[in-house]
Length: 395
Image (cartoon, rainbow, N blue to C red; front, top):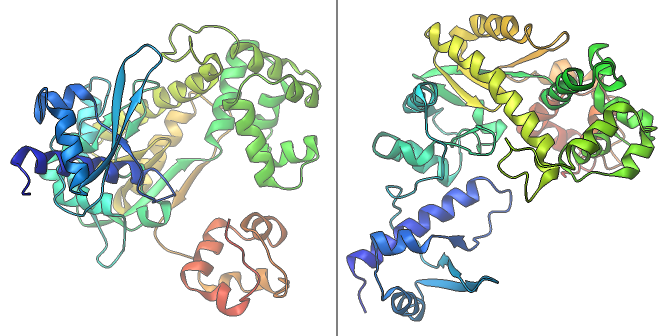
């Protein structure tokens, strides 16, 4: 049985939803996606929608589930089963209303391309094809904290460095250890003197400090513990581990009451700290973005990271540093271009690697003083596998 025009359009939109969902997940397994009944009835099918769903299922075009809520309401989830056309025209996010700054940042996406031969993702490839007609479908500002989300945001860092802006090579600039830095700033504003802010202002690597103080095995474990503190629920056990310091007490307290400005606070009060961190980040970055626009610098955003043409790198660095001085006593701006260190520059560092042992990435970072760029270089040039075929274990 042939498909009607509305049925074909419906399937094309579900495929678009699949692609968008996959773009933000490491697991690329096809999963069910949600499409509101309001959208379905307004654009595709009226009262006969469930009959159409069953017809499409019988033709092996879709699978779907009807989910009942406790209050008697229901919604549908869909999975399309065949390849075919993709339609982004109705793919609208529940975005905060855009202001002039948001709209100018969105417009910058029209200048994005990628180095020929670099494999990205299906979603990003669709963005490159569709951005002239359906740019709105690829840009949103979340209602939680005002963070901007685009296909660049969900693109892997190893691919982002191969982007082009107006056909020019790009450079990435970001703020080192931004979340600890923001927490330090917020703590200092709310409780004054505290050991966490002191660690930051003394130039400590906060993750190594946590590793030492909590007797953890490695930096990655310490990083996980930091995010447990900042984004998890209030935790008395962690407070004990830090000797009930005033900063950890404040962190637990702020997760225990309703913060009116946080849209999720009534149901998830533990999200208060995440809201404070992200809204503070957005406020600081918006001041940087505005100065970049004022100076006619074309840029892309990935939260605390800005991506600019290599010709604008020096001026962008100065703008970021000048603005960050207003907020932080101590900070570092990382600058990363799309070049990788040569094997010769890291050969000495890997002389002591035991090829008969297995190492995780954090062990290579800590034990052998390799940088992330060193490891990336070794991986992309396949030199690590060739030199030490048994020593590297991916997480």
